[in-house]
Image (tube, rainbow, N blue to C red; front, side, top):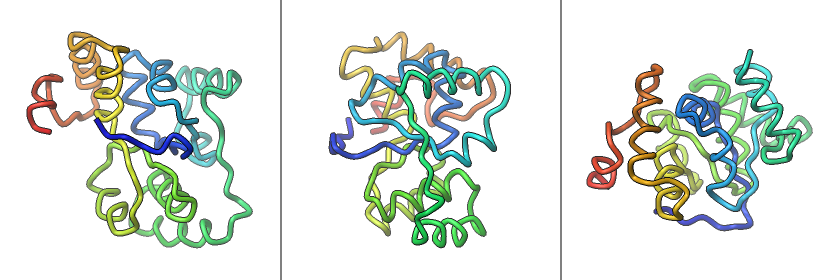
Length: 171
């Protein structure tokens, strides 16, 4: 299980939120790590519509998730503009913010984020890191992890493994 500094914010990209929604465990996402979770305001407004948007708004109202607005942070804005030419707006916003604020990025889009995060020494967590931490802390059983993974896959998202045991074996 990855350990992260308890004082750092976790900046959550849309894909992790979507995975937890498809896995029917959105509320659990906010309980796994003691760190405060943040969603970039632009990502929230751009990506989330319908019932999922209402669920996220409820998490925001309960302060389980907080909005992150970097509109007055010129360093971040310039990096965001540069990254957006190569990556999606969500990953770009999260990576730009984490680069200058040394917080933790939550994204499963390793194809886009991994190299940038490693080059800029940004800690990151994937959906499976959250699931593994939930298992290790007793929030989920292995069977519940498998149900989560299966729900996410059957609802059209990709996961690195089909079972939790398979994931643990590969890591």
